[in-house]
Image (cartoon, rainbow, N blue to C red):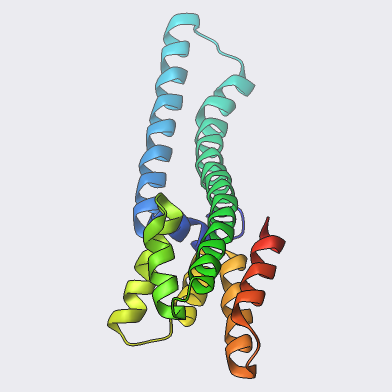
Length: 184
């Protein structure tokens, strides 16, 4: 099935449900098939004897290319968004680090840093933190879940590193600064 449909994490990163994508993909393919068949029929009436290869291309290759281009477009868009998200995570970590240096607590720094940015990436981080806050869960676990759902490995790595730093008493600020530098 690989290649026929985009990865679930790619769709999640773009905010598209699997059902919606498949519905649109089927509609698009049906439209391409109808266009190919219509073109073939028109060609038969106008020129009487179209080449067999042209008929096959219009009837089969156009719908297949339509399907493939839709899947490829999702993969490309999610790759771009994933790299944007990596940069946003680096900025977010820098903001958390600055707030921690200013004397804020870890949770306060995380919430304030998420509120400081705008765009899709910061919105997703804010939503993850709000979900953690409302369920009384760990902020880092919520960020890890966001990373797993969307395929953004930097979020998973950061959450894991900070959890280890917290459990072993290491300095969180140093860990965050090192991760932000590595992401850049």
